[in-house]
Figure 1 (tube, helix red, strand yellow):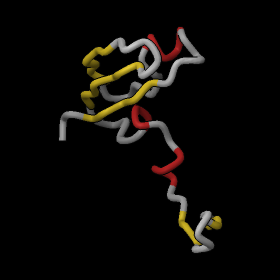
Figure 2 (tube, one colour):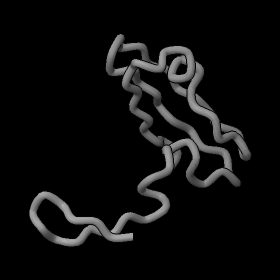
Figure 3 (cartoon, rainbow, N blue to C red):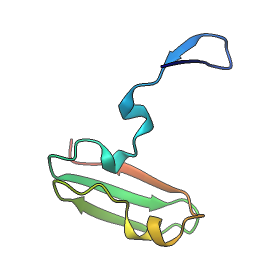
Figure 4 (cartoon, helix red, strand yellow):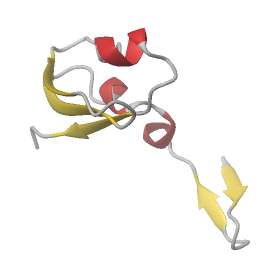
Length: 73
């Protein structure tokens, strides 16, 4: 699926680009530093293999902006 960017060039949107970070690579354990940019809460979270749901703070506070930074690579 291609879309036009603001510069007029075609950009390719891959499936990984539209999935949330915690939904990528679900068949292996992943470690993230989750940071709420709204209230500055931060937590290191281990996502076990098969887990594809967001950090609990993200689920409980839908209006907050949360950044997921993968740290296990």
